[in-house]
Length: 246
Image (cartoon, rainbow, N blue to C red; front, side, top):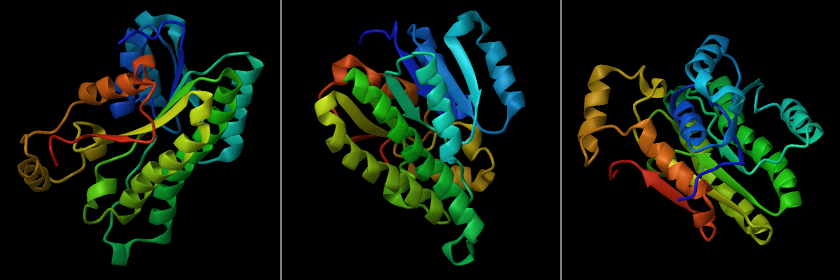
């Protein structure tokens, strides 16, 4: 695959977990990366220090992808600076697990707003930007949970399945403009997103994986880079599962 010199990448939720690994991977390939985050300044600043060797190639932006006004302000800044965005990775995601019968409206709304509405907000504005240049790559970090439906994750599964459905529609709408829209559906990946799972539950989940292990951030990042590459120009509206065979 070609490297990404001269290209600008946006990675939402890009300062921790899978997003952090994706950002670092693109930086190593020569891209300029804008990593967004919503809350944790400490983690963002620590990541910036860790990536200091990349200098101005890495930019951090703090805003909430679920708030359309904040997303609009972000893209207005890009337009004002006359920057072009070639790649968007919708990685922002949260979990608020609970049994469906016990799930609160707040738990449902929060997960849907960040995971699905955030993907819509960012994709809508990115597409308008990319259409001017007749080129773009949008990759959503969905989840195998959106396919399998794990107990206690009605909100999370619905949001992740929604990302896949959204991408199928959007991919057809923008294909003529040489913009592709695809999904990565990770299974269990070693990140802080699953760090709060009880040890016994982790053991059970690993038993259910044919490869008998959790995946790595690097394995996800490699697939993202492939879908973002020019070599993947005829792949759109699809989902790559990185789940160890689940």
